[in-house]
Length: 69
Ligand SMILES: [Zn+2]
Image (tube, rainbow, N blue to C red; front, side, top):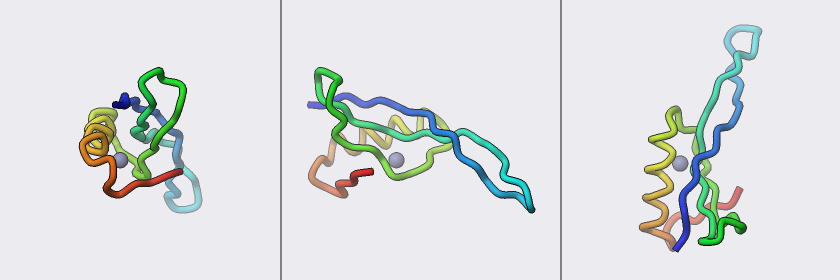
């Protein structure tokens, strides 16, 4: 088994001529001892809840859609 963590990432959206900073969220799966990063989701979730459910979904389908970042 692994554990799900949610990481906040700083993103920038360009609106007109100016980049506007915003926050996004990514799910990460760590090994049980929390030391080994097993998987990072490749999305930019807008809420931590959404990112967390993405990680939980990945936990349920570990062989499917494997991504490494
Ligand atoms: Zn995701």
